[in-house]
Length: 375
Image (cartoon, rainbow, N blue to C red; front, side, top):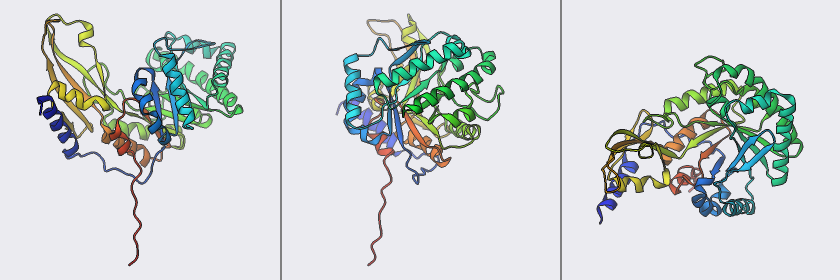
């Protein structure tokens, strides 16, 4: 057996055999599964779609960008033929399509659009027309600039404008028989303090008008090495979001099926590209471990796998570096879903389709029940 194969077997043995201290799985509730389908993973998700589609409540193609008050465009990097095939395959399988609209405008632009009743109405008209033209079952709004690009001082003004926008848009979409979902970062209580999280999104008001609130419960660590969605943080946000929304009935937990690696030390002629954070998917984890000859260890506090490896200089570069990785495997994704299930939430949404493999679907399979037969 080749060295890489031996390492892979060892890594998988550790992953399967390690004793975990995650919360025991509560499989009494089988949560519906939604999924975002980003264009950069279409090769994988399209190939798997005929098998996975019957297991999904709805799918959100993730390649449409809001570029102005009245303009919505497909990302220029998406393969149009492949995207059309994905949509056709989902429709043949009978899965509702709820495209995500990503805010691709500069900081403050959409906040200004929502502040003006005229441009807000124009934006709503554009979204309703987009949904009708595409014959979509609904729309998902992924407007993250308010939280991550706009100045926090604008939140108090944006918050009621956002509520007015989603209220009007929900009414228009519902009149057409369509749904409205919002994908938003978490809050940790129902206040508006620096410790409250991303309170620019009014959870209580949204819960009254939208069909689903998808909470992005991942990317805890982005700029430096650390866990993706540590268990304590997920527990905190599930409790805080439930309180802020007033009810768990419309809440959907965004579940990570990925990890990151970060350069934590380097020397030589390293470029920014050499040292950039990289994404690893559940489906590619074993291959990475084999290629880099590492065996991950389980961090019981975070409920995630972590590892380090070194990259030596080669003929093409003098750069040497040490990288640290963290990732959530299939069992970890299910453990996070169980937290939401125990709180009465209405579903989970995978980030992302194409990152998954069979271990994910096995972990999320309904429990097998047996009926005792009287002798």
